[in-house]
Image (cartoon, rainbow, N blue to C red; front, side, top):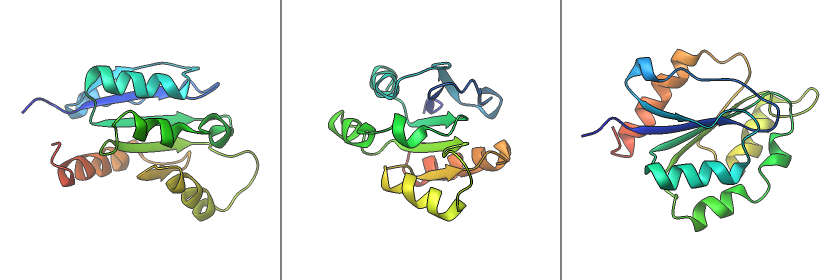
Length: 133
């Protein structure tokens, strides 16, 4: 079985890069200022197993309007979908933020202080649970 393909990129003005190669993943990094539709296109082209998005400027909810519907229309229902970073402007209840993004279709929602090793372990578990690892 080939190593799972992971799509990473950033929304808006975020330039965060997640180092997954050391954990055995193939990675397509879309870079900063990536429109949500480009994640869908890349996932289709690479037959990705997961999309990991980050946003550090607080406008992720705005940037993601209609994303989940487009993802489902593209046939990417079983894709593992994560988001992390500074997702909202100002102070917010982390549980409310998590609920908001889970409603948008994300499997996991991480705050800006999340340990990358813990997120990678979550990813491995989620991929394994879906038979993709």
